[in-house]
Image (cartoon, rainbow, N blue to C red):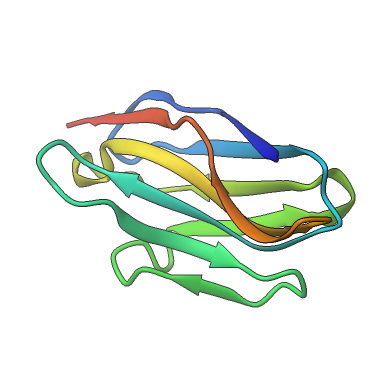
Length: 119
């Protein structure tokens, strides 16, 4: 089983920046795609950005040009740099990882971290 621990959320004014981190630990052969998702009150969870082991990235249209996802494979950690934040970015941000262990291929979610952007 893999544990994902997120950090870096908080309260920021519109136009500000935050950096989220998510560290994976546990019985891991390899971590494959890692990503960030968010869920605002009353809305469904949506993809924010993903990054493959080799560095290929994918972003939601709403965050392109403002958010940057990156990863440190040696540390099993994924980051989300969020710039030019808007009130509509307010949500609980959760990390997800697809990984391979001795038992097969699985996915795991972090507990989530609150990001609040004030206008």
